[in-house]
Amino acid sequence: MPAPSPAPGEALLSPRMSGICGTDLELLHGYQDFSGVPGHEFVADIARAPGREDLEGKRAVADINCGCGECAECLCRGQAHCPNRSVIGIRGRQGAFAEYLTAPVANLHLLPGEMPDRVAVFAEPLAAALRITQQIHITAAMRIAVLGDGKLGLLTALALRHMNPDILLMGRHREKLEIFQRAGGRILQTGQEEGSAPTAGEDGTGYDLVVEATGNPAGIEQAACMCRPRGTIVLKTTAQRSSSFPFSRIAVQEQRIIGSRCGDLDLALHYLQYGLVDPQPLIETVLPWTEIHRAMELGAARGSRKVLLDHLGGADSPAG
Ligand SMILES: [Zn+2]
Ligand SMILES: [Zn+2]
Picture 1 (tube, rainbow, N blue to C red):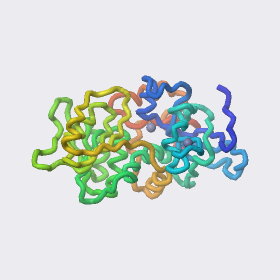
Picture 2 (cartoon, protein in one colour):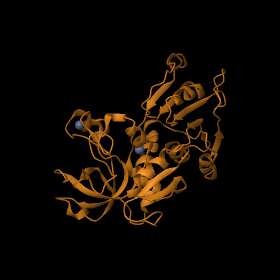
Picture 3 (tube, rainbow, N blue to C red):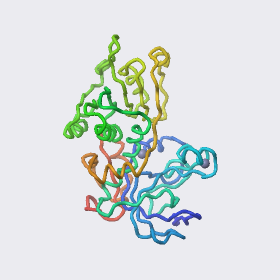
Picture 4 (cartoon, rainbow, N blue to C red):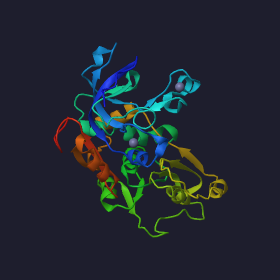
């Protein structure tokens, strides 16, 4: 493909490292009707920034939501929910699995010089995990469970632990749960069989907050079962398939369901810079980006951790 040329206010970016996300796999199955180049988790060099030449040659990550900047949503609440937005590598805008992409200069966040690419590439998913802290007032006294030991579930558990010491991470993969356990967290491995996970008692016990990050449409049912009456369920899963969820339970239990998507990249970079979350145990492997087909297969394999693509050098080279 020819290199894109940046529109006014945009920069031309050259990816250094990118990550494969569950959303990329969903896109392959028709999510968002996307066609083009995916890739929304990335670290890039700013190759050209017309009018902002001072940025050229610097490393950056980018907020993937590109709003119109003119509608009420953009003007009042930011571009994340602009009805006319494009989203890098997800909706109406080419992504980072390429030699070049463009992004609005306003969306760029420069990286501290010492942060390795393989850490900075987690800024986007970590921001999505930390989004919960901007939606809910989390206290140390709350009972919190995170469902799903995938990349987002793990990052969420690791990030929320700074606000609450006793978070339970539930999932099916012992190795991935142990990443959280080694960081001092509490884990519960659940099996395939029904009823292997805890449910809230009839006496009003149960979790104050349940984060559903299983990537599975049936996860919300489990979350609702574990959540106490009047408790809160945060929905992170964006799986396209539908579930036959019994919503009457939510009404009877007066539970709140909060959708949660992208977050604040500066907050995520702060967590990464000061080592509040170390994402490196989440890395499955680093492949040269030309091996993207193999990388997608690895990323889709059950229980795989984060597969990263190195756009600069060879496999497992110490990029950055
Ligand atoms: Zn993602
Ligand atoms: Zn707008």
